[in-house]
Image 1 (tube, rainbow, N blue to C red):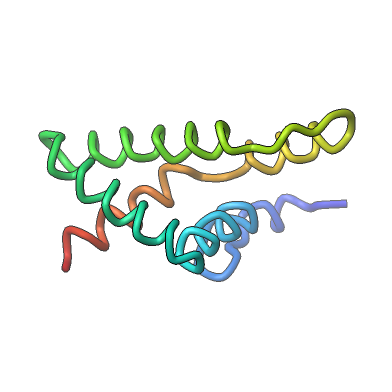
Image 2: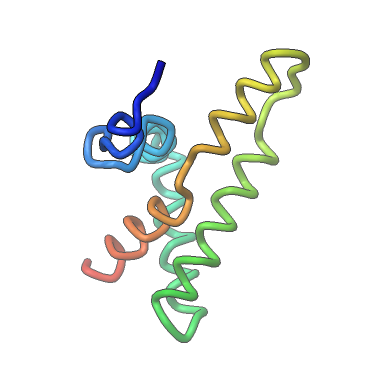
Amino acid sequence: MKTNAAVTERFNGWSNYETWAVASCLDNDEESYKWRRAAAREAFASHESAATAISAFAEQLKATHEEDMPEVGGVFADLLGAALGEVDWYEIAEHYINEVVHE
C-alpha cells in the first residue's frame, strides 16, 4: 500500500516512474529522439512564450502517445490507461523545450 510520502518521491529525477519511463523511451529510441527534438524546436518557435510552447508541446506528446497506444482490452486497457494517466506531460515537455532553448 502506498503512503503519502511515496507519492511525493521522485523517480530518477522525474516526478514519478511513469513520467520517467516515457521520457526515457523518447531519449533512448533514435527516431523518437529526433522527432521530439524537432517537435520541441517547432513548438518553441511557434509560440509567444515558453509557457505556451510547453503547454502546446505537452498536449502534442500526450495526443501522440494516446494515438500510438496499442489496442488492448479488459484489465490490460485499464492498467495501461491508468499508467499513462500518471504521466506528467508538462514536465516532459518543459524538460525538452528547455533543452532546445539552451542549445
